[in-house]
Image (cartoon, rainbow, N blue to C red):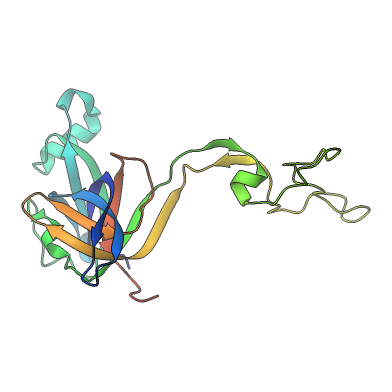
Length: 212
């Protein structure tokens, strides 16, 4: 069951000094505040979940069916909606604002986002193949090499690593340490990198398997 989390916008990366004097690479995220737009319960919907919003958007740019959903739940102008499963939604109410104060320094979080799209890539870039020799006479510098068996089964086995589209996929980075929290500016610093480009939207949630 997914833990409660926040939608955030990626600001960029920087570095801070830890208590031991070592440089720590961090990603700065603008997290929330995320209003609770809708609450789903086990009795009415068959599962417990929270629908939270993030950001603002001109009403004219929002599809009409979604405008009706916003007005029904007093959330006009919300740019993005996401649903988060919870064990029990009784402790929340519609209109409640969720912010970075729910995360503590030293805790661990999972960050979910869409990785940068790299376009069509070869096996060397996409799968880290070594490639052929960089010498005169070699014509297989970045080619994948043999890709199938001979007489049997006379086809390429499914799952073979080949050139193709790289990136643009949903990625979850687990167990990132929370280095800093600024509730006044809605900022959170997490150790390491997170998927996506600058200004992309990601989901931060309490890690499901701490220390894994």
